[in-house]
Image (cartoon, rainbow, N blue to C red; front, top):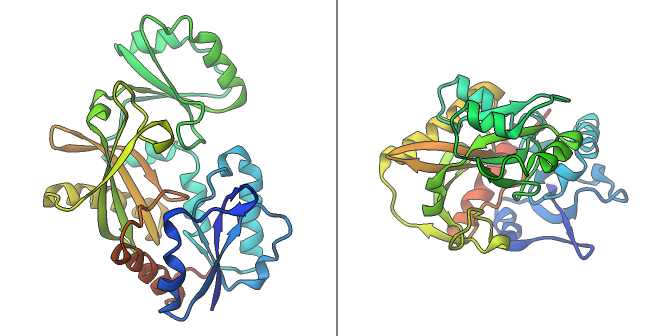
Length: 296
């Protein structure tokens, strides 16, 4: 079996990062794999028996091309992990509304409708928020995301309106717990694998490494936290009708209750930091492939 690991291009070379170990780990299952640039128009995807979607970090910059790519793979009956239906549902952060309906704790959010004449200051005052975070509903890596407060909301209005003209926008109450870190629960084949703590730099609130954030693999975690993360993934599985091959549940700890920040099912960093973790990921991919779970 020959599969493509879809990734983005860095200096015209497929990005691999911490996932280089997937190649030998998949080979143990009789699966030959190679990293392929997902938006390279010269790629003949029919050469592959399946596609594993990984670090396609720029998909949000070209969402229609991404959707067309998925449709093309479907039309060729090429299995995809995660499944295209999962990817479509997860690409817009309005999936958080679906999860909230299933009683998953999420941050208080105002979803700004298209062409809505909205005052940023009014949003904060109406919801009695002192601080908020503005972001597009289709984005990643904190791109076009910023923090505002009661004092600066009026001066941020022009920036807010400019973003609304280009993208659907959401405004979330700022969560001060982010200062102590965001927890990422990693699941392969619906089973909990490992936990990572991502912490922002001092006096910052972005946890991504490119903004100075740090990452620590956590060895021990209380069972009730894992159970809450499992509940989040279970709710998503009920909504989308499939168990994701891979999933990352990003949360903050609010006094023992996990509050969902993001459920990453498209291109999350999976933190394949050890050989054992990498093999668990490869095992889940192989299991889904050989069980025909990925077939359309």
